[in-house]
Structures are given as structure tokens and as C-alpha cells.
Image (tube, rainbow, N blue to C red):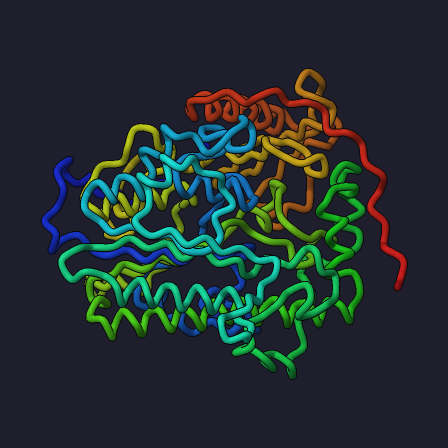
Length: 487
């Protein structure tokens, strides 16, 4: 397959850099946000001026992905710098692998003298010993409800609380020590237990009251009912369709919930502005690298779906921005086309701290790309998968490269023929045609060869990840998802 040369930069020496050369690191981690929902990415409605400014003055990855699209796997991948096949969180029982926690970016940077902090949504079970090694400051905060009662009896949104806590962390930062702080938002995740449209299902912070009230929300581009009808039954009957009826199934509900969703996202942007202002106030801005990204993509009614979990780009693509105030002016504002993964961020932060990437990591540092030095061996494909699931989500594994997406779903168990998808991304960027479903006699010899190569590539990527998948049992059949009765 076609290979493209990419930028790379030699790894730093094993020894720690001098304290003056080690920047502070602020990672801002949104929930359920697809790559296109930023003003800087060209979205016609959503207002994200503070995040956009990070991209204007930094670099933005236009081809950033998660390898598994769900909350807990993405966070485990972020913590450990590995893909799901390597960390096996919720595939194997128990907390996140303690050995991988020992090489997490938190642990490595803490041992290197950084003050490390994680505030907000964790969604990953950690052994007490692992957490002690990883964090100097740990303040978990989960939704349910999004509005938390304060000491004076008022209610405050979790997004704003995380802004408060982040500012406290910065105000308490010693002047002679670098920091690495991760702010993990619960927004823009829906409140699944509350199906009321608007502030019930997508609760926004009060500072965003009235935002987008006078704007018409554009319909999903992949809104044709025929696209949903073309899906195999196991996806039509999955949680993707069930949650569609929670959020997007009527024109009125769609408009209400999209406005609410964007208010949540603009609420995150508001807190980004607060944190940047505090960095400037504390004299930390000139030496703080800020990274903005999200835990997975998100269906906003596309294909007749809601949620994430699948092989389609709406599920896998995420925003990713790295702002480094030390970059020269002519290196800022670039949009990088190379494939970046959520598992790359751990190695990136470790290199910023002057340490080499641990051998346990499946991700690679993005610093070479950010600094504009060309490698010959940057990835042109990656393993994508979903192997630890509730009953409503089918297991699958696949590979995405520059030309194709291939996925095989284990709908009848590991020993039975799998259901395959093959999309030609050049000719069919919306992934509307499943070439694998074309009867074999009608397939060209080249297409048969491509299918065979991609199947083999999945096997190679699985082997390279260093772990085998646990037993893949059949996903029990479900009743077709139906539109709920009106109440």
C-alpha cells in the first residue's frame, strides 16, 4: 500500500532535561466530542474561541483518532500509552494493569520531579498503590448529577467546578517545580439517566444560558434514512440505535438537544479561557504546553445513530491540538495530516518532561511532528477495535489506513465467520459502500487481494500489541430497537 514520508524528531537523551527546559503540561480532555465540532475545524455553528486560539498559536492534527471508541478504554489508553489490546482494561478482570500504571505518564513524570494532578472524570479503576505512584493531586468528579450542591446551597456545574479546581492547582503550584495536570471533563457526555430533551439530557453550565437560542441547528450530513437501512441487523439493533431515540429522532428533539450539546461544549471552552488566564496571572503561560483532545468521536444523528463504539470515522475521529508557547512563530498555526492516536499523548508528555518513551507503550511521541522534523517511518495505519463490551455492543477488530477502513465484527462468536466491512476512503470518504459485502464473484482480483492483505494486517497489529484478546463469546441477539411510545 502507498507509503508517505512524515516528520520525525530524534528522541531526547535518557537523562532528564534541566528544570528550566522542562515545560509545564496542561492536558484538557473532553468527553464525547468528534473532530469537526470546533470553530477552527470549520463547524458553522459551535463557538469555541479559546480552543481555537490554542490551534491558531499551536498545531492541530486533522487526522487524530482513538483506537477504541468508548470512555473507559480511551482513558486507560491515555493513562498507559497503550491500545486496548495491550492494556485489556475490562477485558481482563480487576483494576488497570499495575505494571502499565508504573510506566504511565503520571508515574514517569512524577518520578522525574513533576507535580502531577488529575481532576475530573476517571472512569478507570486504579489500585491504591498505582494511584499513589501516579498522582500528587487526585480529585475525582463524575456526573450524575452534573450540578453539584455547594456549601452555600447553590448548584454548580461539574465543568465550572473543574475550572475552579484547576485554578486552585495552579495557585498552589511551587515556583521551583514543573507540573503536569490533566483536567478530564464530564461534558459533553449526555446524562443517560434523564431522557428529557435539553438541559435534562445535555445539562449545560449556567454561564451558557441562552447561547444558540436563535440559531437553527444544521441536520447531520449523513441523514438519509437509506444509510441507516443499509446497516446490518446487529448494528440496527445495537445501543447506537437505541440511544438515537433518546436524542435525535424528531426534528424538535434534535434542535433542542443540539443546542444543549453545543452549550456544554462552549462551557468547556469557557473554562479553557479561565485556565489560560490563570496561567498568565501566575506567570506560567510562557512555559506551559497545553493539549486539547477528547476521549472518542460521537454520532450526532449521523447514519441514524447515537453514541460511538463502531468502526466508522464519526466514532473514531477526535480533535487534537497541541499549543507550545516555545515554538517559533513560523511553526505555529499548522494543520498536520499525519495519523495521531490518543495513545500517543502519554509518550508526547513524557518526552516533554525529558524522558524516553517506555517500552510498554504502543503509542509514539508527537513531538517530532510538532517540531517539524521528518521521519520515514511514521505510521500509515493503526489497529482499531472494541473487545470489552456490554451485551449491546458487538465486538470487532480492524485496521484503518490512508486508503481503507477494514473491520470484522464477531457477531456469531470467534469460531464463526465474521461480518466484514471494507470502505475505500479515497473513493468513498463517507464510508457508505461496504465493498466486503459485494458477492465474491463480482469482486475484482485487486479487491480480493486488498481484503486478504488487510485481514493479515489486523493479525500483525494484534501480535505487535503484545497481548492476546480474551475469549470472544457471541453477542446475544437483541430485539430490534424501536421508537419509544410517546409519554
